[in-house]
Length: 309
Image (spheres, rainbow, N blue to C red):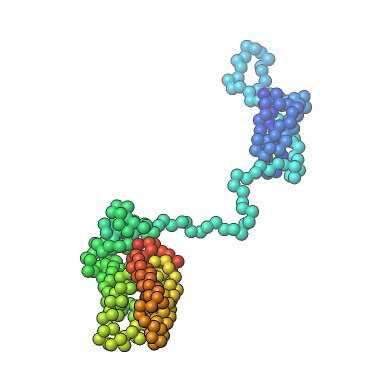
């Protein structure tokens, strides 16, 4: 026999059928964990059977079994403050004002190797298929992967420049020596950024060519652009542009001092003249080594690599 009880917790009100062996005990509601007192069997009124056994045993018993009595027992409902609250599986954050991120992290942008056309990530240094730096070459478009001619200025599919602008964002006026000479004239007061060897020597070559027919007058016109391209060339190898200021000032001071010694009649084979000669050779060799060094790979503190490597 089972005892029917009901949880009196207003937030639960569950109907339970408790076996009679729990009579006189206290159990917890499976739903809300509230305590339920089960009355003893003696205090439970027994309802009369709806189908009593017949007095005459010869009569056939009913075909249906009688159902057990249903007993409704009053249950004590504890105060709301004493009911234990189970912890939430996913509690709310302490700071409700914090909102979750609204944007999902994006995948790296895919580009194309300019040498073999293989797909590479935008921040990749080299192509994993051909091993060549992905941003150099003239066979494939870096943005859409379309095969282009080496002489093409723009990609016919996406319209992005191929040769006139490299992928590092440093614009050049073409890859020719004359183009670099024009670029240096336009950036005659630009002392930031980097200048590769091809740009420096292209400017130097045309400066010498213009120096001869103008009888040296081009020196004063090209003085500031020359100083600026020296400054950027040193940036390209990771050196400060102050090195150019140091050796130019040193050569000027030594040359002025030698001129004073010559006016005073000091012979050319005197020890002081020989020492100054070696100092001048040392300064020129140091400047030549700096100006002939290759660009430092990748981006340095002065800007991106003008070669795009």
